[in-house]
Image (cartoon, rainbow, N blue to C red; front, side, top):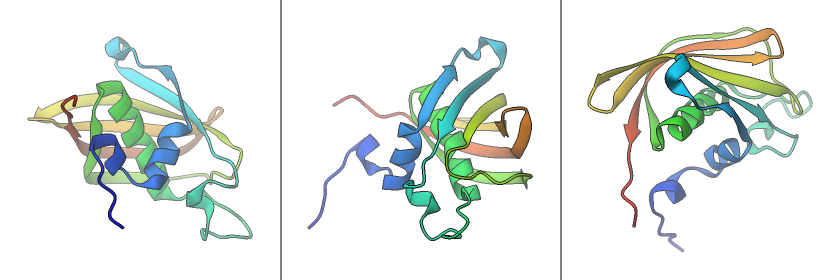
Length: 141
């Protein structure tokens, strides 16, 4: 069976779960940053098979949190084009409330942006990223 999808329907089930777990704190880009919180329970697909007896939130899912926040802020779909610097410091486990913050957003050319992002649990730094992403704007149907 083939499922026909359009724009938002084309994202993976895991990416959709990440978007649904997002609670936006601030989308006002005038301060130069945006942030959102995320909470993932044990049933989150990203925990399945990733150390089943000691579930850890995968790094690729942390990057997807950044892309989900960027996409929500810019009202588009954000697609990773380059990951230039990643530092993972602390693990994320089921039930942790994490805050994702994007700063230093710069348009490079076309719809490609570079940015810095960080993820925290309370006051503790979990990870830092530098990446480039392409924004895909979808036409209303």
